[in-house]
Each structure stands twice: as C-alpha cells, then as structure tokens.
Image 1: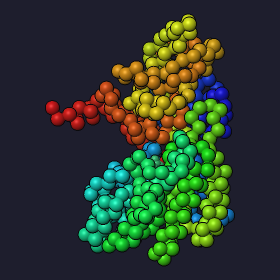
Image 2: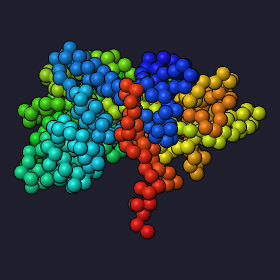
Image 3: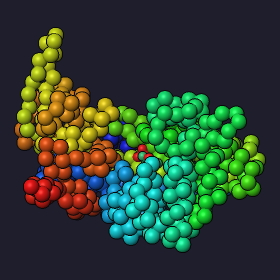
Image 4: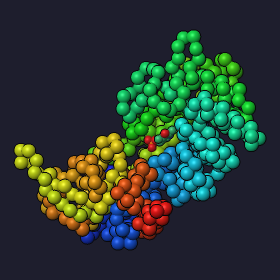
Length: 455
Ligand SMILES: *Cc1c(COP(=O)(O)O)cnc(C)c1O
C-alpha cells in the first residue's frame, strides 16, 4: 500500500496491511485465505474500522455541539449498506439508524435496534411501510409531501397512535455539486421547498402547519439533506441557517418552537490515494459554530440536532476483492497502450462508476510485484463497454489471470446497489475482525436466481 492504511491520504481501512510474504491482510486475515474460503468477488468489511468511524462521528459532533450547548444524535444512513450485524455495530457505538424503505426498517428491527432509535425516510412511502413504522414505534417519520402528511395522519388515527413527524424541507442548497445556489423553485422530487411567492406560504411552511393541525401527528423536527460526497462544511451551515429561520418564523406564527433540526447526510469519503477525507472534528466544529451564530441572530434557542452520515462510515471500511481473468493490452491512437484487466465482477457489484463516473483505486493484493507499473483499466465481466470498475490506475506490468485485486472504499453503495445483471449472483459480504472472518450476507447462488423464476 502506497500510504499507511487508515491514515489521511490512504483509501484503505485501518486494518489493511502488507504482510511479510508481500500479500495483503485485512484485520489479520490474508486476502488469499478470504478468497479461498468465501470466493470472489467478495465484499470485505473491516469491523473495527467501521465502528471507529461511527464512534468518531458521534464523538466529534457531541463534543462540538456541547460547546454551543446543544445535543446531537448521529443516525447511520442504512441505505449505504445495511445488514443485521452492521445495524448492531452502529447501535452499539451509540448511533441511531435511518431507513428509507420497509426492507431497511425490517433489517434494523431484526438487529434489535429499538424503534425509537430508527427513522423512516422516503418520498413515496407505501401504506405498508407507514404501518410498519408506526407499529415499530419509530422515533420519527420524515414526511416528504403534503399528501403524505394527510396519509400519515389517517394511519395514525386508525391505529390510535401519536406519530412523531419531521418535515423534510429543501433549502435550495446543493452541495457535493453546485454549492448553495440561492433558494429557488427546485426541479427535483424530494421534500417541501422553502421558496415561495410574496403572497403565499412556502410549501415547507404549509407542511409544518399541516403537521401541527393534523390529528395523530406530533411535529418533532425539520429535516434538510443537501447532497452527497460533500467535503466542505459551508453548504451544511447555509442550509441550517435557512432551516433555523423557518423554525423561528413558525414559532412567531404559532408559538411552537420545533425541538429538533436534522441536517442530513452526505459527508464525503476519500476514494483515491492522496485525497483528503473530511475531518469529522473540523466539520462538526464549523457546523456547530455556524448554527450557534444563526440562532443568536434569530434570537431563538438552539434545537437538538441530528445528522445522517452513511458513506463516510461504511465506505472506507470496505473493499472488494476480485480475481483477475483476461488481461488484454489495447493500443490506442498515438501508440499508447492501456492494459485492460478483467475481473470476475463489475457493474453488478459496483454500479457507481457507470452511474456517476465515480473514481476508484485498485491494487494487486495477493502478492508483491517489482514489475514496472503500467496504465491500466479494471473492467468487469458484463456485456457493456461501460462496465468499468476503475477507469485509470497504475498496475504492475506482470498482472495476470489468477491475481487477487482489491478496490478500496466500496463499503458504501456497493452491495446496497448491487444487481444480478447478466444473472451474475451478488457477492457475499464478509466481516473481518481480530484475525477472524465471518459471513454477514451470503453470496447469491444460481439456485437462488432460478428459484425466483416461476417458469
Ligand atoms: C442518502 C442520504 C443520506 C446518506 O448520505 P451519505 O452520502 O451516504 O452520507 C442521509 N440522509 C438522507 C435523507 C439521504 O437521502
């Protein structure tokens, strides 16, 4: 590994190391052993690293918000990757769990996460999902539209329940791409906009008033999520200011000062060697100071806060282990040769390069090599030329069939977005800790795929 695993500038989890024979081990287990025992492709999660990241987010935000006299909850965004074990780990580390579907909710509940430590999101929740969330006593359902507020109220009253509801608002801040454009009418599906004409309430204000008036609902918070892969704090602060201003306006109009503000997720991960990841301590401090200043200007006390990191906790804790198959030099115009290295997975286990042009790194991990490094592209086995795992990476010129190759930072949105495209079974997820490996999610089998087919 070119950089010290786990250190700033390394995409590898803290438990990754090159051992004496030149191969790589994860938390004390050699990749060759993982490949033999569990097969490849294989998602490998470094449990201690994942727990450490969960803890560092919680501790950083608790400390920074305590400095300004506010409390904060960290919700792990389960959509990044959720299994029963992962839900337990983050719960152990003091995090709550965010879910966005009935499936994610079921996994969190199967893990024994108490209902009041679970949130339910979603822009199009089904009646069954709403019912399951109410029956589980979730701590919050995040309402995404006016029609949903009416549906939540109906479901609550039918059950004689009082349902805690947050209202998701869109602040016009988009980070991770175009930074905080002024509040505008937005052309996207999530939340209720803060934008409005002079003579009308914003959809966000209308939603808050609707929850206050709705039988069976208790307004517990205002929610804002501004994007993904965010590396700077200012977008969060601008969005928080707008949410706090809305909260102050609601208090002025109704006397109700909403208890909690959720600032969403989107904390970035470092995917490539040399990239500097977000420092939770720094971003927590800057957000805490920003919201404190905003609350002072508005003359309202600070609410309780929550945040919802997903990728930044599970992404860097994971890697994907592949076996190299075909290696093909491809001569491009000008005589440049790119070595195409095919692996035994591809876009079915990591759709992000095809979906977002996401960049990854790769190394040969089954052995060391003193061969010269050559420009390479790691591609999958699927029937698409866009089936690329790593666009550009230097690999040893002697890379050959049978080599083990690892791609770091695939813990988030790898298995959770996996498909069975080309009827390729989805890889297993294995956790490694203290020299022990165990399966968290088993590999699909061809028999699984056939069993779904009713002929
Ligand atoms: C996707 C999402 C998250 C998590 O995003 P990450 O980029 O994985 O941190 C959190 N909250 C909401 C509402 C989301 O949609």
